[in-house]
Length: 127
Image (tube, rainbow, N blue to C red; front, top):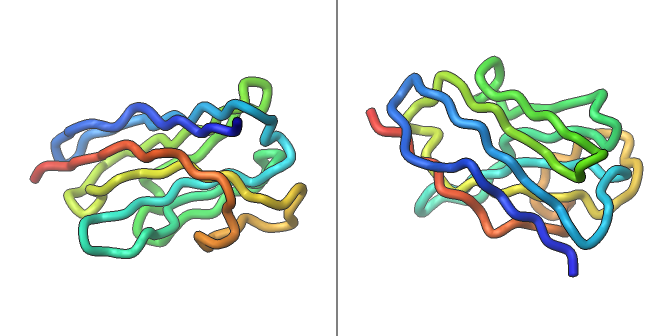
C-alpha cells in the first residue's frame, strides 16, 4: 500500500520558519516528480512547490519564491519543504504529492498530474 505521510506542521508567528517532511512508503518515487500543495479554508488546493525526479529542477508558486525551498532524498524516499519568513496567508493544510508519470520532463504544477497524496499537515501562521 502506497502511503505519503507529512509531518512538521504547527503554529508559528509571522516571520518564523517551519520544515515539512514527507515520507513515502509502499513503492519508490525516485523516478517521479514530487510536489507540495496547500489548501486554505474555503479555497481551492493550490500548487506551492515541486521538484523533478532527479532533484535538479524545481518550481515554485510566485507567492513563495525566495522564501520556500523544496528538496528530496531519493535514498530515503522523502521530500521536504523548508519554509522561511512565513506570513499569515501561508496558513493552510499542506499536502505532499507524487507524480503518476515516470521521468516527466518538467515539474508538474496541476493537482490532476499527481496521483498519490498524503493526508496533510496543518500550518498556521499568526500575525
